[in-house]
Every structure is written in structure tokens, then in C-alpha cells.
Image (cartoon, rainbow over all chains, first blue to last red; front, side):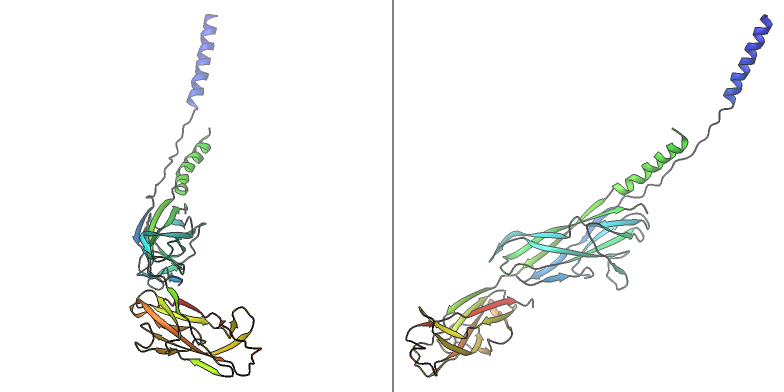
Amino acid sequence: MNRSIKLSLATLALVVTAGTAQAQSGNVTAEATVLSPLTLTPIRTLQFGNTFPGVLKTVAATDAANSGAIQVIGSGTSEVAVSAPSMTVTLACVGTCTGGVATPITLNVSASALAGGIDATPGNSTAFTLGTAGANRNLVGGNLFVLIGGSLTPASNQAAGLYRGTVQINAAYTGL
Amino acid sequence: MSRVARWLVALGLVLLPSRAMAQLGNITAETTVLQPLQVSGIWSLEFGTVPRNRVTTIAPTNIFSGAFSVTGQTGAQIAISFTLPTTLVRVGGTQTMPINTYTGCVAATYPVGTNPCTTFTPSAAPTNATLVGGVRWFYIGARVDTRGLNAAQLPNGSYRSFIVMTAAYTGN
């Protein structure tokens, strides 16, 4: 009887041992290469120069001397969505404006993208419609230059003086 | 949680930040607005007393010609135009006296005659002028024609109308 109990325990121990021995383990590696974050650096002021009251003035985005420029720096050839929170910007009198009414001037923004270089060499720039919804472009060598143009018309009774505003651009990786 | 589920969660953690990390950049936009134009009527075009059945003409170089001044940005080009009445209306009445054949000249000084005055045609399309020294004077002449109008049609009295001058920068 004692021998029978000992045998049963031995059998049970074998079963439990066998169960433990059948467990398998496996590993997968989860990894990601984190791209360098985008940085946006202002390169050039959008410069309208002198403007006459009541007269429309336009600066083309491809105007190498006067268009505004922002350099987007990121990773390789990743696709970036470029957008503007608003396509109109208000320019306000800086300091003293005289001889008329110093109402803010509305600047209507347009833009084109220039991948890989800031010069507006024909064929090197790619026009696109900058909007609040955004436009997608690929970085070239980790760069995208967003050139900003626009137009404005001071009122016919606009006070003389310097007017200034800020154009804001957003950029984000699309994941592509 | 299964291994598959764990893998999907890990993948999600990698992808989500790339969409969420929008970056902002600003540039300055600026312009210098030049001096606004100011147009002023300085002197009326005065025909004085005119007889019936006559044509009375005032040349723009006449001291009684009408005069406007325009001040603005020195050296800028402006375009000027006029709204010219075809009749003068009796003050306190309805009778009219024809006025026509407008003539004009532009000079650097006031009154007219102190410097050369360059002629132009007020009724023509906008005329360009340069604001040398930031100011120009525009003189207007015309003629009134009372021929064929009797005393009932043209009673004694003062006759008046308005000449309107408009000036705008051309951008040049």
C-alpha cells in the first residue's frame, strides 16, 4: 500500500514536471527610429518696401530679394505637411504714423515651396497653394524652404509710417 | 494581452508622435507706407459778371482760374482726373448756364503765372504728374456760353456748380 502511494506521487510529480517543461517563450523586438524633430527657422523678412496709399503692391513668393523665407529642417526625404493658421495677416503701425489714419493693413498671404535651396532658380521652385488645410512636400536633404509672398493695399488715407506683422507657418511630419 | 496586441500598441506609440509634433515658425512682414495724398480746392474759377449772348473764357493761366493743390510723397507720380459740370445753376433757382471747353495747366507754385505752367486737358483720361517737391498746383479754366438765352432763361443772379478733382498714386 505504501509502495502504491509512493508510485502514485511519483507519477503525479512526473506529470507536473512534464507540464512545466512544455512552456515556450518567444521574444519579438519592438524598435523605432525616431526622426529628428522638425525645426523652423526664419531666414528672410517678407519685405514690401515703400507702398503708396491706395495702391496694390504684390511680392511674389519667388521674388528672391523681397519674399519671406522659412527653412524647415528635418530628416532625409520625409514628407512634411506645411500649413498656415491664417492666410491673412494684419500689419500694424510701428511707432508713429502720421498724416492720415493708422488703421491696420491686411496682408493676403501666398506661398511657394522651394525644396533644397533658397534661391528661386527657375525649375528649382515648386509653386503650391499654402492654406490652412496644409500642403504636403518632401524634404530634400533634410530641408524645405518655404517662400512666402503676398499682396496688400494701404487705404487711400493711410497714415505714413512703418507697418509690421507676423506670418506664421506650421509644419509637421505626415508619417510618410 | 496577446503578443500581437502588445506589438500593435508598441507600433502605435511610435507613430503617434510624428503626427502630433507640429512645429511653428514665424517671419516678419513689413512695409513703409508713404505720405497720403491731400487734395485741396484753393481758389474758385471766377467768371465775374458775364453779359448775355456772349462767350466768356477764363484761361488756366488767368489769375481768376480755379486752383487745386495736391500734396504727397516727394517725387511720386500721381494720376489726376476731374468731374466737370456742363452747366452752372442759378443760386436759389433752376436756370442753368452752359459751361464747357475746360482747359488746365499744372505748375510748381501758386499763384499761377509765377512759374511755367504745363497744359493738360481736364476732360481727358487721367493725367499723370510728378510731385516734385511734394506738391503740385493744378489750374482750371473754361468758358461759359450765354448765347441764345433770353432774360427769362437766364435771369440775373449768381450761378454756381462744382468741379471735383481726384488724385491717386500710380505706384511709380
